[in-house]
Image 1 (tube, rainbow, N blue to C red):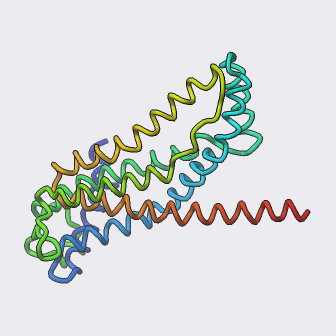
Image 2 (image 1 turned 45 degrees about the vertical axis):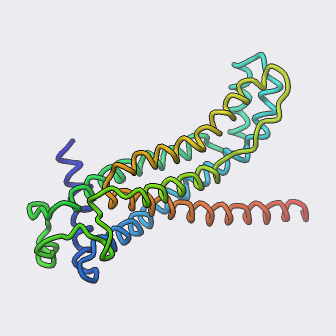
Image 3 (image 1 turned 90 degrees about the horizontal axis):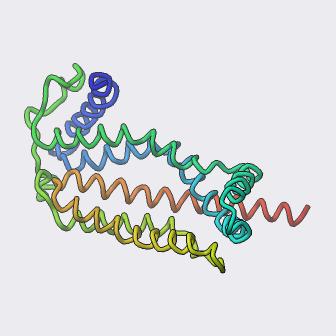
Length: 251
C-alpha cells in the first residue's frame, strides 16, 4: 500500500512541485506552492462541485427536516423513515457531500508530505528524467524573497484560521425553530455547530502556529480558493433555483 501511494500520488506530486520550482523566477518555492495549490484545486474542482451541490441540497432540506422532527418528536424510527422518504422524493443524497471529500483526502495527505519534503532538500531518487533535467541544483526554503517557508509563521497561521472561519460561516444553517421536546436535539446540534464555527479556526491557528510556513501557506491558500469556489458555486445554484421557480410560477 505504501509503494502504491508513493507511485500513484506522492511521486507525481513531488515532481510537479519541483517542475514548478524550476520554472518560477529565482526558483521561488513560495510561488511554486501558490502554483501547485491552484493546480490541485483545479484538478479537484469537479469533486468540489459535487460536494457543494450536496451540501447546499442538505441545507435546503433543513426547514422540512425540522418540521418532521416536530411531527415525530417521540418516534425516532418514524422520523428516520420520514426523513429518508423526504430525501428520496427530493432526489437528495445526504452522503453526496461526503464522498467527494473522501476521494480528495489521499491527494491532500500526499501533498502534505510532498511539501514537507520539498521544503528541506531535493530528493533526486524521486525525480523523473524530465524533472531531473530541469531541476535546480538546490532548493531554497525562502519564498518571495523574505518568507522562511521551513519556519512557523504566526501571521500565516492567523490568516489560515480566518479563512477557515469564513468557510465554516458560509456553511452555517439557520437555527432551529422547533417547540416542545423535539427541539432539544436540534438545539444541542445548533449549539455544537456554533462551537465548531469557532473551534475549527482556533484549532487551525494552533496547528498552523507550529507547522512550517510553507505548509500553513498551502492550508491558507487552499481554504481561500475553496471559499471562492463555494461562493461561486452557491451563487450559480441560487440562480438555477430562481430560474426553476420562475418556470414553475409561469407554467
